[in-house]
Figure (cartoon, helix red, strand yellow):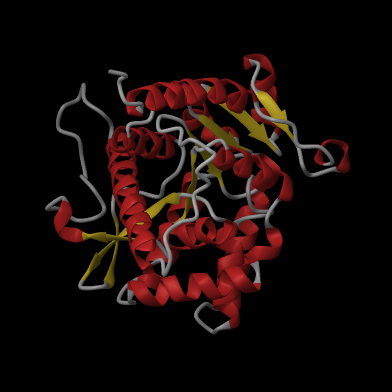
Length: 326
């Protein structure tokens, strides 16, 4: 249930280094998180390019909206863009197709309940979830997983999208900015969600594959916590983004590394820890779980500031394109 990545890329197993020899160097977890982020950025751009190439017609860009080439928005998925956990919705679809046992679905759901109650994910839960997911995909084709993702999105996930969060993403698109999902969910499923919502693409967990089939090993680790921040930073380098002009949205305190990386952080449907931190740091808070704040979606500060930068870039571009009077 993870993303496609060629095993020959790094010349080592997808699980990453087993130890760090330099005692003053990064820990094994940090190495794995960094590797996961780099792999996620590469896979996200590859899937985005493949999707663009597969279009029957070119993208219908509005010529009246200048592209803002240095700003982007990054959205967490679970409980931020999608109500509940996308991996649990995906597991429901797999269980209905007899790919998973009912006991596996109950296990996925129970771990999500514990996370929502405590606001924290235990290392043992993350590890066991990773092992179950990898045992499921080992030997299966990457094309099969992508097809299942499309079917399950249409059947289950499409009705779980938070309209308020989608409206925020649409505002960034209308400002000419890229919009990326960032999630621990397998990159294939994340890419399906992004495509269905008309977003730029998705950063997600990546698994190693050989000859179109999963090997059962991750590239790095699950895209989580600092891994998300590494992925966003890696994508920014590849796309020439200015992170100070970028924005990020999440519901979870686990995503503070990603939120702290950009110029504008927004807490969406936040857990208690993130809500407290957002208040202390002056971050915007959007809560679409009740009618209290869901009725009106205001323009985020990031877009107000970004519009000025984008307008300036457009003016400069037009001046460059204008012929010099003789």
